[in-house]
Image (cartoon, rainbow, N blue to C red; front, side):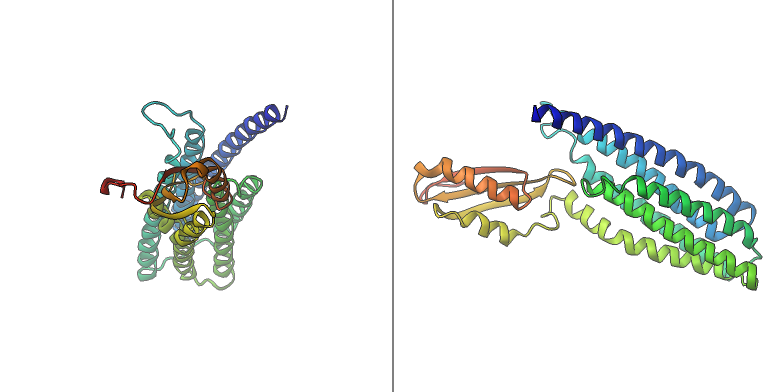
Length: 299
């Protein structure tokens, strides 16, 4: 009965997330279109840069939805782990997209600083205010599931950050309306670029790390060594490898030297439970005695 309930919950969550992604994509795509057109008509680099950033977030939402769906796909003889690694690739692509958006924003902002032009502050305020509402609403959609997957959490953080960025654009519009200081527009554009870099850098670094099978953040090599060696029947370990199967699943392989092979089953059960508690979801353990020959190919 419990298993049946869990299956229903997973199915419900999958459907809910699919709907959340779809609604978020539609809302943000509509807003990006309006924001870009308005920014172009009123020559506002603040609006255009924010539209470019929001467009990158639409792409990110589409990729995150794709990764979420593929991560649920069944394994096959060709893809024995399924498509879980797609989540890592998506996080890397999203980080790169944001960096490209930053380059565009900086170039546009510098051009406007060099050749400042008058801007309709009222238009900037109204469009950016709508952006605050849409971005905040989209972020709220992901609140419930943001701790279950790093890509979903990334979508949540991006939308929340975008809401704050749109607040900045509203402020620039108000400044233009009250003081006529149009230079605030490209200045806000540069601030937006800085915010994006700050929020994206850790994502880019971790995505690159996971894409080359580095040890995932939050998992410490030495700690895992100590955890395995904490079993009284374990004499030593070697050929320990830790990597990410996806943005939510970690894997490990290790050779464990035992004092007595008769205790292998008990050690296997204990060590796997300890590793699960430490965030290792899939562990492949190979047991051997001290004098067992291990070829270099095991490295």
